[in-house]
Image (cartoon, rainbow, N blue to C red):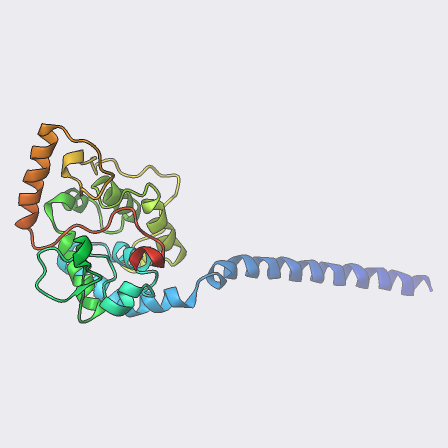
Length: 249
């Protein structure tokens, strides 16, 4: 009787040990697989469809593929916005100095529409050429794998007014591991973003901002900017309007 009782105790502890090992393994498995489970298929499909063109433009123009894809996802609501669907415009490029078809123009309000493309890939090419303008030249001092500095630098150079624009891009890049597309690695979120992307002067930024009374000097600067804009083949994008399909409609 005593011997059987001892065996039962031994069996109990053996089973308990195996069970604890199983629970530990299961918890570890869930922790590892959880990030993958939160990824949405439409994001993965978008990345798979456009990553080749993004990598090609990185080689041709120097714009990081991770940044291109993150901006495309954010600006076009993962390719589902009305403008992306009806005009193949994934980056909100307006139709200034544009001889092609225009989307969303309203003559009665004298509003400039957006460029309409024959294919989404044309929008990606236009975006890559746009970022090669002098306004963003400082960004090319950065490595193409330094996605955090690129994200912050885009806003510092005047791409967007939204203070959360860099963090939105970074969140997409890190959640969907876009940093690995061009051989990069996950960056430490506590690391300070490189400071060699200098703040651009206000007069050198896009003028899609809140209106206020300008001095005569500022008015002259605006006029000079408008002349310079007319000499450039590509045009300003929308500012501070990201992350919502309604923003692209």
